[in-house]
Image (cartoon, rainbow, N blue to C red):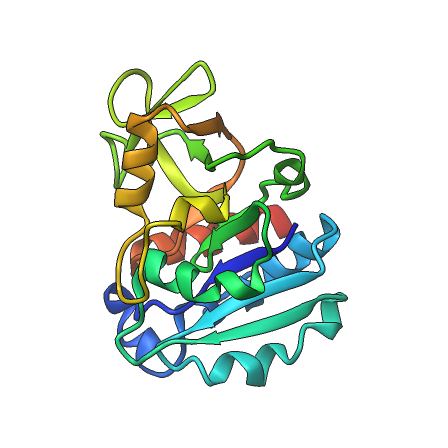
Amino acid sequence: MRAMILAAGRGERLRPLTDSQPKPLIEVGGKPLIEYHLEGLADAGFREIVINQGHLGQLLPQVLGDGSRWGVHIHWSLEPPEALETGGGIFQALPDLGHGPFLVVNGDIRTDYPFARLRAVKCDWAHLVMIPNPPHNPGGDFALEHARVRTRGQPMLTFSGMGVYHPRLFSQSQAGRFSVVPLLRSAMDNHLVTGEAYRGSWNDIGTPERLQAAREESTVKSG
């Protein structure tokens, strides 16, 4: 199984920090966010990893190199300045992601989720990792019922930004800028999306306040 780290977003809400660096290079606990993902994926046995480049994306290879530091090989997927959003970015990278299911993780989250767990998932369309609703998303995103993810129902949980997708999820897509969410919703309506709940450590680094919370949590753990 191959993996993709989504790292092309602009990070508007984190400006001015993101005026000079891409969001995945922001440091938490003394290292860039994206390095935690590379370590976790390498420990889980992933060897081929795609990273998309958008805003200030040229800085990513300067910091990460070819991935050999972690025992992986990084494939770079360069996007236009306005980036391609989640769906368009994944679609462009499909040739480097193989013919079977692949893991996707947002580059701007910090988590201790064990990526090896997703290598064992039987994924025919999509499998999403869901988390308890954080304060910034109290209503949740999707329902998780009997290991199936649905657009409505109980309990409502928040999509973590981690999941496994099969290339067939994008079989009707065309190159360009689009979100993966409508594809997922359509698959959910046809009962094709499985899921799991994860209650371990997870932080979305989307605002200065959430970044500070992640840094404080990291300090507590290291202490």
